[in-house]
Structures are given as structure tokens and as C-alpha cells.
Image 1 (spheres, one colour):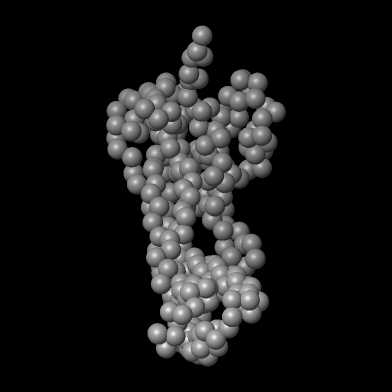
Image 2 (image 1 turned 120 degrees about the horizontal axis):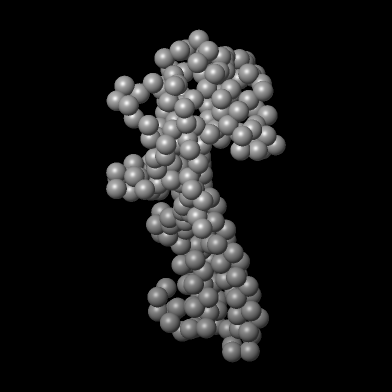
Amino acid sequence: MSSTTKKTATAKKPVASATASAAAPVIETPETTPEVKTEDEEHESVGSEITIEYVGEPGINEHDLKMTIDETMKGIMKINAHLFPVLSTLSRTSIKPFETQLKGLNKEYEKLNSSMIKVLFQLFSSQTKVKKNKIPKTEEETKNLSINKEYEGLPHFIDFVKPDDGKTTFSRADVQRAINNHIKAHPELIHKYEIDGKEKKDTFILTGELGLLFHNIKLEMERRALTTSDAYPLLSVGTLKYKDILRYVSYCLVPAPKKA
């Protein structure tokens, strides 16, 4: 068959190209890597890096896919075996219509090749997940963050923490930590409720020493004329969510001097 194929260079090129196109998905797809876009870290105290983790086998029957590709290749080979002897007997004039058809056949194989690569890439992507690994920042990186800068504590906060070492300066992170530690030491403050049959523990009750602290925080907000802020009405409910603590930590510290 090889001696026959050399006679017709015009017909050989499209069919050989079609054969290469059909085999491309098997060779190229495993080397394809999805693009990963990073996101900004939500908290100032940590950085992040992105890794790709493979989480399972593709949701396809690999044996059936391989058999389909093998059958396609065998079909192409059969076409070549019958087509080349016929084309070698054609005249220059009569070969033109066949050349046009072969070009159209090549285009169809290119579409098939592109579609297979796209489908296989989507299957691979669906079986992978992006995992964000939090990397703690160094002490040098964190000490200058605004949440860790210390200011003079207001009397109501100092009365709440009762520092043994006489410490009077605190950061916003210190205030949040003190409130969290107080709730942890007094689990009766945790307000439990259910949503869709699932118990939630993300809310605490403003009572006792904690209630007094937030009462004074509310007074401090009024002193600063912030009674119309979004955070102010939450203090009238009698409970507060952990995620809202940061709204109030600044009202436990002397305000930072305004820049000129």
C-alpha cells in the first residue's frame, strides 16, 4: 500500500492530517492543566497559596471511550486502504471534486478533535478542586497590621478584662479575643437555636458582665454620635453573633488621633 500512496500527493495530505487529528485527544488531554485564579485573603493575619487536588476518577467509562477511539481509528485505516488505490487511478481533472470532499472531511475531524479535547478537559476539571492553604504570617508581618496596633483602653473595657499586670493598652484583636474567651468560659451565654433542623451556636446573649460591657459600648457609640450606624441597632436585640463582634471592638479603645 505504501508504494501506491506515493503516487498521489494531493490526496495523501488531507487524510493523513485527519488521522493525526483523531488521535490528538488521547495524547494531549492528560497534559492539560486548568487555569487557577487566586483570590484575596479575607483576614489580614494570614496569607494563602493555591493547590490542585485530584478528588476522584472521571465520571466516564474509560474502557468504552478507549474502544470508541480504537474503532474510529480502524475505520479511518479502512477508508485509507480503499481510497488510495481509487484515487491513484484518477486524472488531474476528476480528482478535484474528491479533493474538495476531503477538505470538508478534514474540517469535520478538526471539529471532532476540538470537541473531544473540550469534553475531556471539562471532565478533568470537574474531578479536581482548588484548595486554599492558609499560611500564618510571621510576627514581623503581623505586628504592624492595624488590628494589632495598641491604643489606650477605655475604663469599661479595663473593668471587663481586669488585667493582673496593670496593662492599659490593647489592640482591636485583644478586645475580640477577650470577648471570645469570656463566652468560652461562660457557655451559658451561648444562644442555641435551630434552622432547617440544624442546631446553630453562632449567637451569644448580652447579659451579666458581657451585657454591661456592651451597654457601655452603646453609650460610647452615642458619645461619638454613631447612633444611626448599622451596628448600633444590633445592641437592642439582646443577642449578638460572633461575626459582628468586630463592629464594636473600636468602642473599647481610645480613638486613634486623626491625621492632619
